[in-house]
Amino acid sequence: MVSERDVANLCRDIYPGGLPASAWDLLEVPTSGIAFGLKDFGNAVAVIFRGSTTITDWLRDAEAVADPVEHGGLGPVHPGFFAGLPELWARLKPRLNKPVIVAGHSLGAARASLFTGLMTLDNRPPVRRVCFGEPRPSFPKAAQIIANVRGRSYFNSNGRGHDVVTDVPFTTFIEDYVHATPLVPVTAPPTDRDVLELLLFAWHPMRLYASVTPEVAII
Image (cartoon, rainbow, N blue to C red):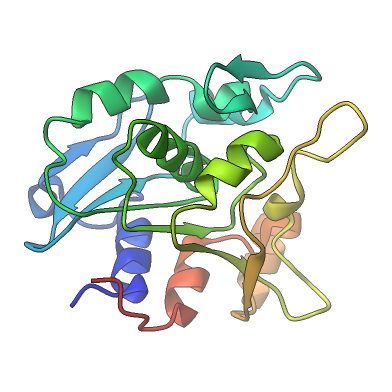
C-alpha cells in the first residue's frame, strides 16, 4: 500500500539532507530548472516536485504578473510555476507507464497541480494529486481540469497562525488565482526556533506537514 504519509515523507526527503540520490529511481535537482524525483513503489510511481531552495526558484515564485501565461488547454497559469512543465511532461510521459501519484510542497505543490492538469489534458491523468503548502497556481479554467483528479492540498494552521504561502498569489479583479480544490487543514505548530528563523514562514516547512499527514491509502 502507498499512503499519503509515504508521499509526504518523499516531499520532505527531496530537500537537501534528505534521501540520497541512490534512493530515488530518478532525481534531478538542477540549480536552475525544475527539481523533481521519481520513486517507483511497484504498483505506482510517484512524481515529487521540490519547493524553493535556489535563487532561480525564488525568481520563479515572483513571476506572477497581472497578465499571466495563457496555455492553450489550461488557460491562464502562473508563469513562473508553469515554466518548463510541458517539456518535462513530454520527456517523462514514455517512462510513466503505471499509475502515477503527483505531489509537491510549496513551489513544488503548484507545479504538481499544473503537471496534473497537463497529464489530464493528455488523457493520462494521475491517480492522485497531493500538495502541501500550495500557493495558488492558476485561474479557474485550469482549476476545473485539475479538480477532476482525486487529491488533497494540505494547509497547516491552528486558527491563529497559518501557512501564509497558501495565500499567494493574491486574487484580485485582474488576477483570478485560485486553488484547484479546497485546502485541507492540518495542525503542526512551529517550534520557537522556527518562529525566530522563519518569521512569517514558520508554519510552512515540509517536515511539519510530514509529521501530521494521515495514513490515507492511495493505491
